[in-house]
Length: 259
Ligand code: PEP
Image 1 (cartoon, helix red, strand yellow):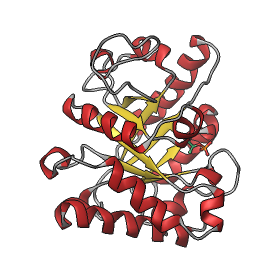
Image 2: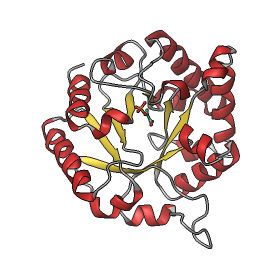
Image 3: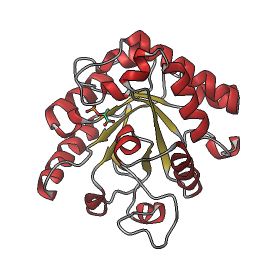
């Protein structure tokens, strides 16, 4: 995004947590209380789908909602799935697409991810596209190749017009860093971010490449959060495990609010 005055963004990916609606409400209300005091950060919470309808937010709400997943078709015989239109109706504004847990445990291919992106953009949900290499790919020094390939395939047949302004976010999430307590160096994340901007530049041109918000995700906590913004030039963070511990997550928000 490369604009000092632009708002940072923090996405909380709760994954399949917490176990009860009352716990979920408790965490959300702690986050909302903090959000009221903080103006320079966009806070987005991605709870399990079953809680989304219960958390319906409005235009003026300080905390926005994201879905962790959606189907690539608008409606039909897809038992167990949730559509983009249902998400819109529930007040959801963002959707995570291409998370490595979906790629690895649910067999999501680049083609499926591409279809989901196309539909999310069509129905005015802002996709948070996740890309990142596995440990084996990192060891084989294939990180740049993987990032480029995942990005290019995800954005196939999506025209420049459809990704104007801030209606697409890209999160660099090395698979080996997710939930592991290990993170890449700030320099490595900086290199990934530069490569992502370069790849976007080659697909959509400089205007979009400079503006598209880039996030980092993978074992972010209150101690390391600031560095990804200051040293790796990320515009925001995608936080998993630490986002369901209210104290830790509020610590991350405060860190970002002062840099
Ligand atoms: C994630 O699930 O996107 C993630 C970044 O998880 P964690 O923060 O737990 O590594």
